[in-house]
Each structure stands twice: as structure tokens, then as C-alpha cells.
Image 1 (cartoon, rainbow, N blue to C red):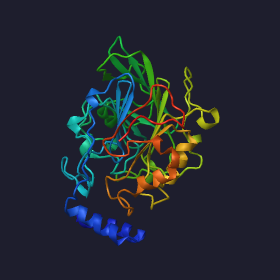
Image 2 (image 1 turned 180 degrees about the vertical axis):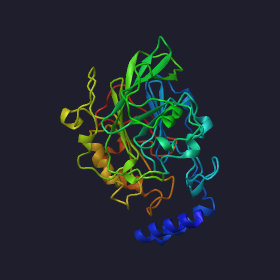
Image 3 (image 1 turned 90 degrees about the horizontal axis):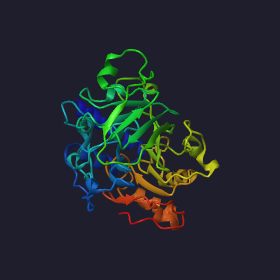
Image 4 (image 1 turned 30 degrees about the vertical axis):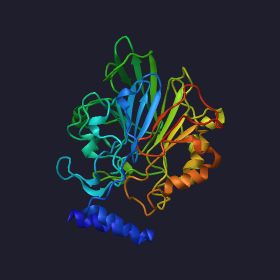
Length: 384
């Protein structure tokens, strides 16, 4: 019955999009594994140095970031399918068409898992079940019940305009997550029936293994509004949050958006952090503050009320004065009727002479953010 219901939903979406080809492809992927697009570039994240920012696109919205020694994994989805998880790690649903650039066992120890919203192609139970006690989950409000019951790590719940700070200390060889927000274990959250966003106690921190010494500093993760939605079974649609995130520290800034439709005021939604100040300010464009790397979606744009087109993503990238763009949410799952490679083709056409600012154009591509901010006219380091 579950399979029949899922096929019915896919058929309705395909008819609405007017794409018989899409219906045939997705129906095929439900029952017969699709031939993979193989990944030619194999990342080696365990050998990355901890004195810079290195990123790789693993697939869909899963991006691995080494931020000066802090490892961050966005929207981890590493299985062969997305959909329902009736038993253990087994998944019933759409088969991926491109293999992940890294299997779970090939990842380095992950400090922070950054989850943008609860949709199945961004929030995968089978993958989340594999993380250990030293991984902190940063999640939107109203999504606490969607973490696996066996989740052993810390949890930070962020609403729009809220932030956490990851304080690095070389002398203690630990990283402490301090916040006004919830940073409790899943068991504590499940046993607490009052406000889940209540302040954590002053002594309650999340300690994350530090694999290599680094200079004492702060890494801030701030949530901001995007134009999407976050519904998933278990709660009403408006009760589940959906976030974009700004990661800042070491004088650099990264924006991660899992999904969004076009936003004319995108630059006003992204917080601006000034060194030494504790609260974010709005509109980085007005202050002349660029974003070093934007990690943003470009696929599934036939559903334009929820997903930006490649051209619209390029516009939002310009709004925040982005230096480099890593485009995701394409070539991994058949979620829209567009051909597999069309999103990147359209993005490259929209970027024109600035196409060198698009990095990691293929799954497994690795990019090192230049140590000194580079003007928009300069070329990026090689990115696959």
C-alpha cells in the first residue's frame, strides 16, 4: 500500500508538470535501480589541512566542509534511495542516479551536522542513524522528534535570527558549543515536555573532539529565513521550521541554503557579523560585506513557488556579493522533469564571463577557499 500511495503522488506531480518522460523515469526508479552516473573525482578529506577552508560536494545537498579544523556536513543523504524508512536503514522510494562521492565510512569524524529542513531528500533517517556521540546536530525548530531515537550527540535547535557559537580551544583540545538555545541530548529533549527552545544552563555545553590544535577562535552558525517549507508527518505544516545558515569565523563567511524559491530581499535575510560584536546585523550588501562561499540549490525549478531556478540562484548569489558559488540539488535524484545536466548548463550560461566563480561543478569536486579574499574578476583555484 505504501508503494502504491508513493507512485500515486509521483504520478500526480508528473501530470501537473506535464511531463510523461518524468513519470516514466521516476516510476522506473521506484522498482529498478537506475544506472549510476559514476563519480570520477574521489575526495580525500582525511588528508585535508586544518588551517584553511576546504569543501567538497558529495551529492544533492550534502556538502562536506572543513572549516579550519571543524568538520561540518550539510543535509546528509548518503543512501541509495530517499523515501520511507519502515524498518531499520531500509528505504522505500526514489533511487539516486549519481553515486555519493563519499560513503559514510569514508567521511572524517563529523563535528556538526547542519540540517536545513525536514524533507526526505534533505533529512534521511538511514544516514542520521550512523552518527556517533561526538556529532552535534543543528536543526530547525519543531524538528526534534525527527532525529533517530538512538541519536547520541548534542542537539542545537535554531529559529530564524538565532545562533550558536562553537568556541575552539587548543589548550583544552575541545570545542564547546555555547548558546542561549537548546543544546541537550535527545534523551533530555524527549523527556522534557516544556518549551524545547528554553535556555540551556550555563554549564551545559557540547564537547566535540578536536583532532588537531588550532588558534583559539569562535565559529558562529546563525539561522535566517528562506522561501520554502518544512512539512513532514508527525506535526502540522506550520510547526516545522526551515532554515538557511550563515557560518562565520576566522574572518570568512559561508552561506548554506538547502532549498529556497527566489527572494528579492535575500541579502537582507542573511545576517552580518562584525568582529567582536555579539549580535548579527542585517543587509551585508549595504555594508559592503561579501560572502566568501554560497552553497545554494539550482534544481527542481519547475516548482518555482518553492525552488529557485539557476538564474534566480545566480541573482541571490550576487545580492550577497558572493565570491564563489557551489551549486547543489541537481543530478542526484529525479525530483523534477528537467534533464539531469540542465541546471548546471543554465547556471553556466547565466554566469557568463564569471563562470570561474562556480566551483565543484561535479560530485566529488574539491575546492580550497583562497587564503586572501579574491576579487570577483580573479579566477578560482581549480575546482572539478
